[in-house]
Image (cartoon, rainbow, N blue to C red; front, side, top):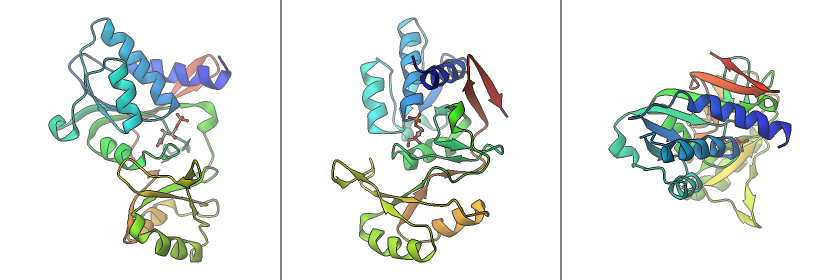
Length: 224
Ligand code: 5RP
């Protein structure tokens, strides 16, 4: 296993230690989250009793394949714990997520969770956010106008593509990936973006992570 994959696995296994029988668990999306979901599947086969709330259709399929019982968000009232990956995190535990395009449901799960644990390999750590392009989910009807506006703001939006077509999220929306490298006031950027009609959600997860478990070499480090 490559070093990065090993770090992802270490972080995933460490996070699963927080899962106890009876919990409702928000299941993240992406390769790191998948490792956590596989471990949950393994433990369920050995008697762990939990229900999962998936953050994407990909995660839903994986969880079903692994025999993890699922419930819908409306039936879950509160979620005890959500475990999810990230594309970047800074020293203040602020995140960019949405590389896999699931940022909207991921943020909704995190918002409705008592505890949010983020799992990551050490490469995801940055001094300041913005090396990774910021995904923003937009309603198709408004996307062209939003692109023009964001271009004027210097954010160089790129409409995400997959297999030669527009990438479509699980909620039927588009994703614009923004260059935020030169932005210093990230909270202001979040507020500004959220005020634009047609922007449904951004991949900025500010003050959302309760802790971040980072795989580093052969062990893990927990940031709180
Ligand atoms: C999906 C996400 C993922 O958590 C993020 O892209 C990290 O993925 P990976 O664990 O594969 O690096 O936000 O929308």
